[in-house]
Length: 251
Ligand SMILES: C[S@@+](CC[C@H](N)C(=O)[O-])C[C@H]1O[C@@H](n2cnc3c(N)ncnc32)[C@H](O)[C@@H]1O
Image 1: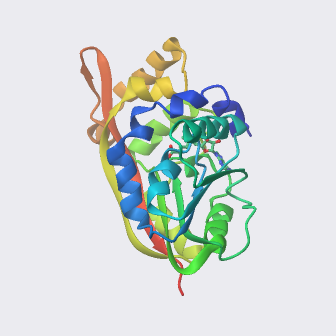
Image 2: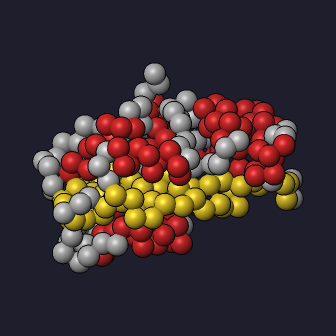
């Protein structure tokens, strides 16, 4: 199985510039979902370059940003220093084996990363374990509807070999309930997706990017209707979806 760190170590700086990852609208969305309170201790799993942790920081007492890839955390540290953000700690670790005690965090957040996790059930069990009873977790990840997922799966795997699987909202709900969560809200929202920006985050070679654009543009039937690929000024745009889920740990 590919090591996710091989995918991210050389492109870390791209994630602190990425249009999607740094968008204030998209960050507000995850903050609204997580509902942090001023005295909270929050955990942002697979924090990458810390975008979500930085959005939570002014709204809570302290944030822990955890990630497997040292270079992503180094970029997060650099930005924290640049912006004088002092209430975030950075921890190297694995979402599937969290280095924290039970019932530690008031808020658990993970965004744009679970599609890399090999063992989704282990990651969700860990999320449930470290969250304090009576509090909520927010999950945001790519979640294309079937059959668009089949088309995007090929593109995702070739763009980034550490991609494993995007779950549908229904699959998310089933897994969360199995891990002991009570799902409070779960839906997918569609974005108008800039294919070139998406490829750029992972520094995909232009020839491969053109091939992958071809995969999307040659989609047929329902997948095509869902993806509605379109060239604007020669650049490919298509639909892309994320699941936005709030789940509760019973008191
Ligand atoms: C797209 S980036 C994360 C973006 C970030 N959450 C944000 O909101 O901007 C995906 C991150 O997941 C991390 N990652 C992948 N698998 C992981 C795991 N099992 N445990 C912790 N981090 C992981 C990668 O190192 C990478 O930094």
